[in-house]
Amino acid sequence: MPPPSPTPPAAPGPIECAAAFDLQIELVTRVGVQPLAPDEGSLREALTSLYSLFATTRDVLHRVAAESARPLTLPTIASTMTNQHLRPFLAAWHPALQEHEANRPTDTSPVEHERQWKRAAEMRAELAELRTPLTSAAKDLAALCGIDLIGPPPASQ
Image 1 (cartoon, rainbow, N blue to C red):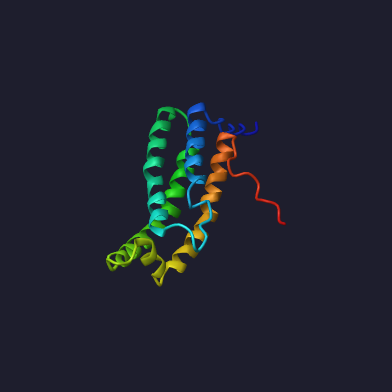
Image 2: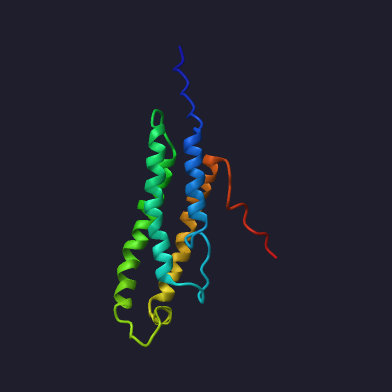
């Protein structure tokens, strides 16, 4: 007698789909997925925005916990995104930028001081590299909820 066929994974329930959609929105609208040009924005604001994804992710996962009677996919996507990608980036760059900010002259604006930082280009480059795994997480969330907010890449001109 052949072994029984493995049971296919259950389709995500409505709570998990809604949570995946919510987390995808939070992810694709932030600088981690959206490019930050060299002369745009603030690195401090980028770090703050990315850091806030931890609270959002925890809130979403708590909401999904009500649906824990079966295996869930969302917690794996969320923990990979936060613990393997966001946490190392933030752990490296938050204290480095904070140290630079502590030395800002009173007659220099925070943004101007940040742009004078010798490591600003390096941080921006690593932020750009972070886009790949975060976009991948957003695509995984899109596949889970069935709604892709990123869409295909723009056609080359």
